[in-house]
Length: 363
Image (cartoon, rainbow, N blue to C red; front, side, top):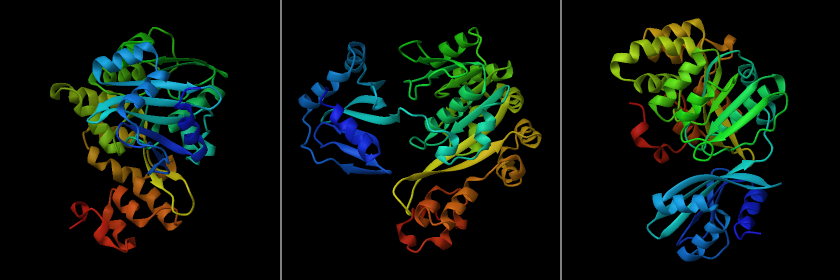
């Protein structure tokens, strides 16, 4: 057994989401959003490097030594998978491990809105799951893909960096490709996917203009495409995609995006105060004809109000979701204020306003 495996078992036992190992520090676990030190000695650079190299393939070690950082995936059969990043820092080597559970939870088990399952059954189009790092995008996307795997008879291709949740074929054929191992880049894999007879394509992240362009093309040519972005709202997501293109192309891209887009799910994670654990708050935008028209006419600033009026279509604003959690006393008023869009709605709930970020206080 590798020396690090004991820390990975501890992660699972304590329900930690992340493990941080850094030369000059003891190990730290992120449990329900907070970093906690493990009762263990300070790790010296040489010792930690030996531990990290023990579990890494030769090609990963070579890439790390050449580039100073590397992403990859590590699995302990029967326990869990881990998304791994090795990097160098002032005191020596360091690593971050994100726990990827072996079991994929369903939308129902995650407590997410049932409309997410309906998105898995769409015949075509672009569905985006967005949010900051650590907001549970991969978990949400895995639940949607798993539902498609159980309910459809199609070919699903995933393009990830690295592969996170492992999907075993159920009713669907699933081929999971890892950037750097099975393909050179997201764009290369996506271009090739269009010749591999897929029905559903899942893109781990739309990182660059070429990937965004190919994802739109795939959605417009009859495929159902799922992807993630690091944006915090539906309106910001639309703007980010359009602004990725040169100015002279943006009018045409707005038209293409309005035709391709089916939904944007933007989510953020909250620490629960009623019991141990965390909970996801979501904004859900469904691309109704009215929303499509706003995108075509470059009236993106009106999307939030359209979401407010779209409850009958399954839409939900982030602030309404946060307010529901706050009224149920599941989350703290301070965190609700920090992560809300219209912060003025949440100021009356905060007792000690001095602890808030004064730069975000409404006038």
